[in-house]
Length: 104
Image 1 (cartoon, rainbow, N blue to C red):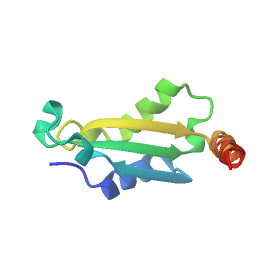
Image 2 (image 1 turned 180 degrees about the vertical axis):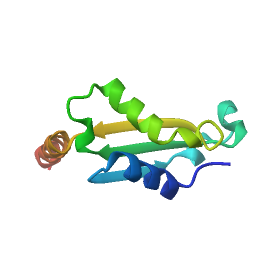
Image 3 (image 1 turned 120 degrees about the vertical axis):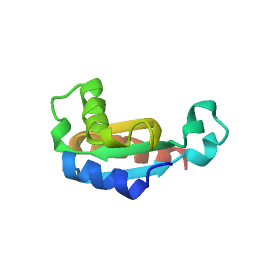
Image 4 (image 1 turned 45 degrees about the horizontal axis):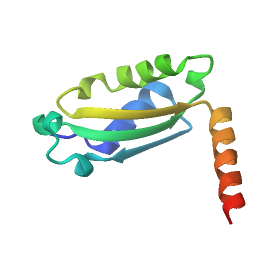
């Protein structure tokens, strides 16, 4: 059985106190995938938290995986994580906006 995205968000909020979190369920795109046969879902998570300050990308991912530990492997089969501090996220968004503006 796949996890409820709202449950994923709830666990992340409780553990990492994010200013922003978005969970996207990609399970439908992986229907029939051999690894998902157990029923676990595929998710993309964007999370912004000051708890990531000074942490490597690997450490940030570990923090997210630790927060969701109870959902692996039965409810989450695959998880893509984008984890930023507030400043990093603002820079990322500004860069994305500048790229969009230059394409117009």
